[in-house]
Length: 343
Image 1: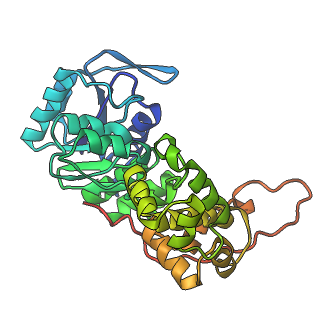
Image 2: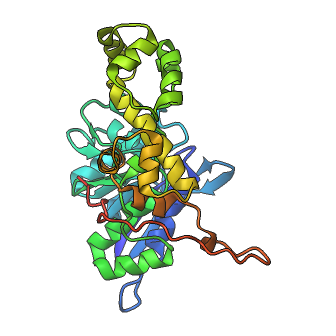
Image 3: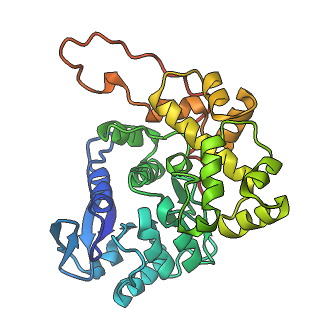
C-alpha cells in the first residue's frame, strides 16, 4: 500500500482537497486491499476551505513517510506559501517523493522551484499569471495534466480527477484505474484537453483601444472577411491594425477572427441540432474541412467530440412527466483521447 499525503494549506480550495482524498481513498486492489493510505497534513492544525473549517491531524513531518504528496490549489494562489511548507516540499523532492499539484496548486510547487525547466499546467484562468511569475516553467495551458515522472500537475478543477486516475493507472495498472473511474462515474481518459473549456476571444481591459474593431468582428465574423476588410472597418492601415493586435492581444487579426468563429461554433454545437456542415457555414468558415482543422487546432477535439461532451442531453436527467421526446443522436467522436498529451 502506498501513502498519499494531501497538503492542507490556508484558504485551500475544498474541491481540490476532496478530489484526491476521495479518489485515492477508494482505490481497491484485485484482492480487496486498499491501494493507498491517505493522510491530510499541514503547517497549521486547521485551515479554512471556503465555508468549511477543516481539522488537520498531521504536521509536515508526515511528508517523510509519503510516497506521493498532493498540493491542492488555494483561493488566491499568488499569496506566498509558508517557508516551512516550501522547505518540506523541497526536502521531499530531494528524497525522491512524487509531487502532484491540482489546479492552481502548481503555484506552490513553482514557488518551491520544483517546476523549473519542466512542463506544467494550471487552471487556464491563471495560466498567464503563472507564466509571468515563473518564467522558467514550461507552461502548457491546453492539456489536462502533465507528467514529468516525479512531478505532475493538473489543469483546473475537475482535471484534478483526471490526474488522480492517471496516477492510479501508473501505480496499479489500467484495470484498477478503470474501476476507480467507474466508481467516480467518470471516464478514465477524457477526449481533448483544457483548451476546449477556455472562453476565447472576448474583449477585456487589455483590448480597450480595439474595442470598436472587436465589436465589429463579433457582429461580422460570419462574413467572408479579409485583412483589408478588418483594416477598413478599423479606419486604419493593415500594418497598423496588425501591430495593435500583436501588442494588445498577442495574436494576428485573422487569428482573432478564427477564434471568434470557433466560439460561435461552440455555442451552436452546444445548443442547436445543426449539422457540422451547417455550423461551419453559419459561423463563417469557407468549408467544413477548414472548420474541422481549425477547431481541432484550437481546441484539441473534433466538433463532434466537443458536442458529445458539452451538449445537454435529455437522457442524462429524469424525464419530465408526460414527456415523450427522444434525444437526437450527436455526431460521434472521430479522434482518440488526447489526455496522452502529457509531459
